[in-house]
Image (cartoon, rainbow, N blue to C red; front, side, top):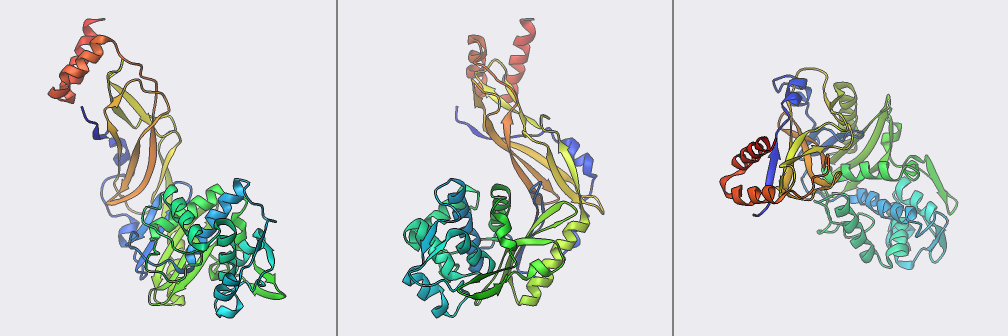
Length: 399
């Protein structure tokens, strides 16, 4: 018997919770940005998206992925903030003062500590700093970019590929608004000790003072990171995070036509997100959200739980239908151990998937008796409902 994708629907209460209809606030909201996404940080709920899976050259936003690799090396103890990396001739010529682009103005063949290189890369978008970090960790920027792509895949960025640490134009380098929102959420959650570098007011290096280039920090919307950028023939980008009244929102705007449009559309998205939604708990941490069938077990099914409270943000005005489904590949083969991740819960608001979390088994299911296994094997071809009915009947006969 081959396993297959299965769905467990025990989720009618969710729709009732939010009410019927699809006229929620998200239906009427629009943005001029070609590609955008707005995500609640705590719950992962997607509040708004527009062409969020469109592949776009990330430009300077690639430096946030570079930072993620550096942060992971710091957290693992492989390097420290005071570890010195030498600024190579390549990094100086292509990314430093001679290049004419954004630079930290690090001195060639001189060491600079990782902490200051991070600030140079993230605060003033220094290409020389990004290259020095890449070469210091990966040996070459090419090797480091492979680390970037591998780490991106590991955190769920399925639609991204990186070819350099700076974001310089490369036909093989791309990402999406959705992937970049995952990156921001991952960094804030995983590296709280390093995240504040994004909000440093400025840096001074080689006797040159520079202010933070991220204009969102002074926009009055509660922004505290991450990065802005521009790509020739593509447009103006932002990957940002803002906090108001204890709620954090991740915002991505890609390919805006101008700096003004980038700022205006980002501000509009963030303010709308904070004002238009409220949080609702739809499942408690230990509440069963569905059942997965078990083959050859003492029980014919096992409960599925999220392992933590499942919350979504729903529009304050109007009613949108909230639905969900538990998805797993099964039936599961006994024995089944409690707490094993076996599937996922997808929550949808209207036509938009707003949340996806892993599902775990609620209890142990040991291998069943010979009778249980014989019934499972003999009745499989007759279908799941027939097998379940037969097992329930046998259970009654043995009482």
